Image (cartoon, one colour):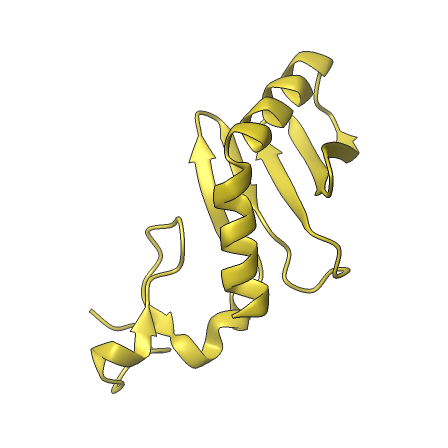
Length: 112
């Protein structure tokens, strides 16, 4: 099934939005997806903002709040709002456990 975005394009020219049940979008519009989800775990959603600074990072959404982690030499909390220390620590452990998947998704989304 094609959405209005992909209507009329051959199937080879569309791709599913990574980590979501969203409809297919044209490959050439990869960057039109502003907040691609990398993965979900329980109440956590791990995603990128496409139009932010170039440093590698991942955002985490939770019903209680949000956090952002830098992914350089080590995983480092950049900011957080509304999350308890326990929830932030749980999110950081999930980022560390899925680091390779996050970096691969980053490279696919931003580098192409």
